Length: 461
Image 1 (cartoon, rainbow, N blue to C red):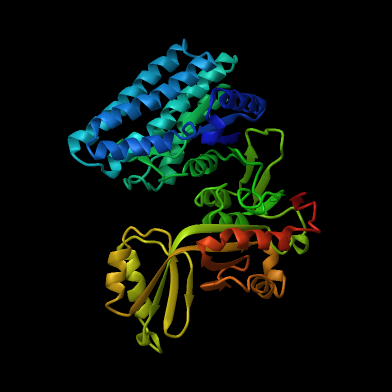
Image 2: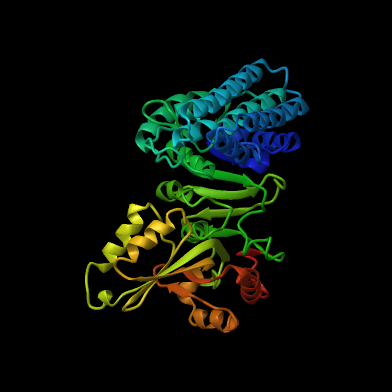
C-alpha cells in the first residue's frame, strides 16, 4: 500500500483535479489510499465564515456560504461529474452540514472551538467526494471513506490529539477490505472525531499529519506528500530564486526545518514516519514526473559527504521577551517559576538563550502576551521586542564542520543579532534578527553556502 496526500493547490481547480486523478491512476499497482485537503483557499473562507457567524453577521455569512458552494459547483460542472448520483447526494449532505454548523453558531451566540471545527471540516468533506467521482468518470473504482469513522481523537477541538491504537483498529477493519477489493479509498485530511462522535480537527496543516498517521496504522512503507513545489528546497523560493531542490534529507533535518518555518511539511507530520520507519516523499502535482525530495531515517549518501548546510529556514512574526533578575544568580527554581507562566497561558517557546541573570526567549503566539508580561514582571524586569524572526540553518554536516558560526556571523556584521542557539541540536544553528532584515540575511547566507561547488548527489543543480 502507498499513501497519497494532496494539498489544497493540488485540488484547486478542475484541471488540477484531473492531474491528481492521473497521478492516482499511475499508482494503482501499489494500492493507493488518498488523503485530500480542501480546495485551495476554501479553508480560509470557512475560517472567515465561522468568525463572521460568531459575530452574528448573518447577511455576510450567507454571501460567503454562497461563494463557497458556487466555487465547488463550478468545478463539479467543469469536471463533468454533475450527474454522478453519489456525489450529488453527498454534496447536499455537505450543504446541510455547513448550514447546520453556521446555524448552531448563531443559536449558541458565540463561536466555540467545537463549532469552529464543524464549519472548517466541510471543505475536506466536499473534496473527498469530488475526487472519487472524478476517478469513477475515468473508469476507476473509488469511494469516499469518512475519516471521522477512522481517526479517533481526544476532545481538544482545533488541536485534537489522535488516539493511535483505537484508530488503528478502526482503520484496518474499515479500509483494508476496501483496498483489497481494488477500490481507491479517498479520505479527508486533518479531520477526526472524538469518543462522542463530534467532529474534531488536528489543526491547520494537519492533513500531512493525517497521511503519515494512516500510513503508520496501515503499515505503508511510503507516504507521498503532493503540493505545488518540486520538493524541499535549500531556501524559500519567494526570497531566493536560485534555491535548489534537495534530493534526500534525514528525518532529523526535515523535522528541524518543519518546526522552524519550512512550509513544505507540517511539524507533526514526521513523528509517525520516524516511529514506523516510513519514507516520506515530497512531490509536485503540477510537475508529477519530477522526483521530489525523499525523507527517511538514514541518508543514502555517505554522511561524510553530506554537506555543511542542507537548507535555510525562517520563522517570522516573533516576539522576543528578555527577562532579567538577580534572583537567578546561584538560585534554583527561578526557571521553573518563569516557564510555569508560559504553561499557564499555553504559549510555546521557540528559542531560548540564557546567561547568569538573563533569559531571552521567543514566542510566535502573542495572544496572551499582556497577561504573561504582567505575571513575569512580578518576579523580574522584562523587555519586549516585536517584529523579530528566527533564521535556522539545518544540516547533518553542521556537527562535523568547524567554524560555521564564525563564517555566518562574519557575513552578518551589519545585522543586529538578538540571540543565538547552537548545541541543543547538533544539526541546527539558529539566531534571531529583525524581520526587516530577513531578505538580506537569507539571500546572503544562501549565496555563501549554495552559490557554488554543490554535490549533485545531494542537490539537484
